Length: 191
Image 1 (cartoon, rainbow, N blue to C red):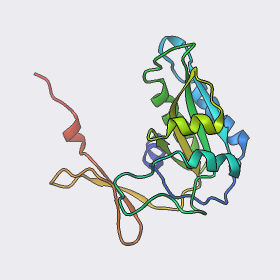
Image 2: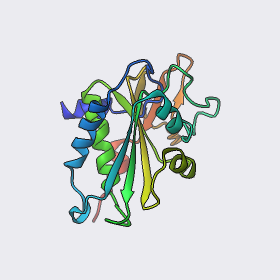
Image 3: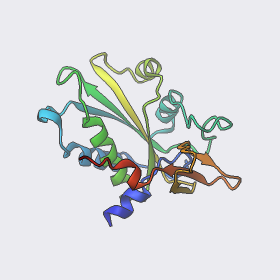
Image 4: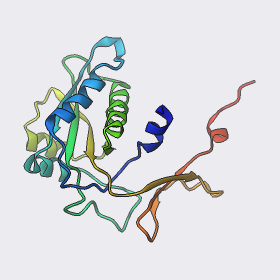
């Protein structure tokens, strides 16, 4: 069951924008993240929830989408995320949240999959523009943005080719292919 959640948790980039995600669903995902481990239990992560068209547009305009898909700019209107969670680090509590953001982001996405949703984590953000647009205080570092929605694309995993190319791509049917290294290639044997 958990394996199924992990395999279904892909980086989706096209969504049914008209499928509304309500704030209480976002709050429940953040509540899952709130209960995860935190370095020294400092709990420096804070969140901005966005699920209205106006605020969603402000967040969307700050994100860079799918770097390997050179011919695709970003999701068109109607296929954009229905919600976002902006993850922040409160520097008053910890100047370097370390791996807390990764633990929380993965937990949020696994919770989203369990709810029949999908998402994509963004680190490529115009942080200055987002800070201005959402009036984010200076003591809050913008760590990640998680886009959420009902996926409308098929994402398949496949083995990395013999040439070692790990770039994801879309085929002629708009199926999104994600090459993954073999298990044998990532486990390091020691002597």
